[in-house]
Length: 271
Figure 1: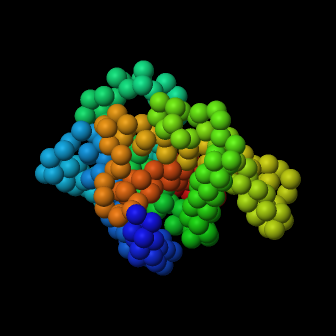
Figure 2: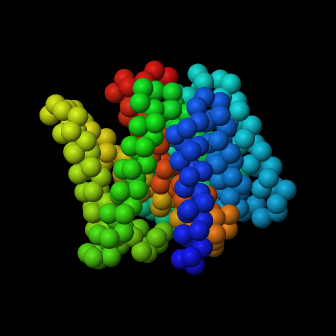
């Protein structure tokens, strides 16, 4: 298993880095769209569609929606606004699982939720890419999320006692969340000091980083919740040793649109 994970990572890492940071414009949108479409194919399984034709049809619907968003960029504020509402609702659903699971048990509801998970993630990345320092913004959100994941892993193993959401993901603890949050906040503080941010800017940066990390936790738990309801361990076997695409990007599906909205609110870019 470890050998598989290493080989897969060595192959995917240069492809992912090249796609994220070397492609621009339509090529970038197409690259991210391909990843999101694979995620849609996996999500269809989480929604209860086991037949391949149905899963492919759902992926095609998502691909068509992405094309529409590319043609009509004025829809971006609506897509990201829907994401903010959804991830707020998802937080409640995770905290109240399994009692709340009856609200989204139908395949139709789960397929609709898939759109709220996947489309804003694509939209957020496309916006970040077009804004000033686009590559640095994309790198920033990824570093903060990955740092939080790493910090949570080690902090949880060392100090984890209180379960975060035992009905959803028994292995995660509040101590892990605090550890991951602390690492991300330290990184944000270091960046702020190195770039000579004012006191107010640092406070806003820390608040934004905290919101970003907490949203990434919700994104992770949300996919776990849907997998648990479906009785599925991994979203797919597309990535040997790593599970599926959704298993790798679940935290980012929440963090990216929230990050884009925070920057938009700070007047970083214009939608």
